[in-house]
Image 1 (cartoon, rainbow, N blue to C red):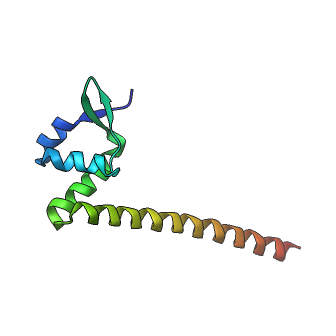
Image 2: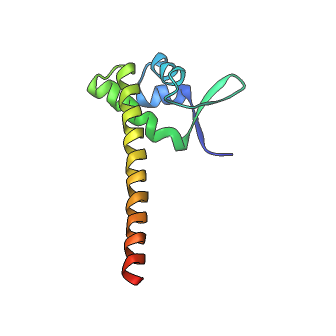
Image 3: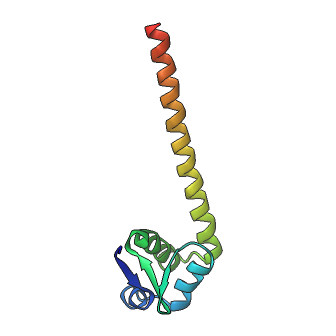
Length: 100
């Protein structure tokens, strides 16, 4: 099984409010696994959790702001990926043209 950390441990380690964690989950910003009524965050999702925590507590960004920023960053990454794909296709077409 993948490594995971409980909600209670995260609250203690990061010194955050448990309601903040629950709001992240309820808004869909974090995916959790529940076992025996204990909520767990998978280690692979820890960077997102840390990012949201820093934005909220250090930059005073509220939950709707976190949702907007997260959505914009996902869209930017999608556009970057699409741009890379298009540039690769364009390069391949250019290579075919030069070889032909």
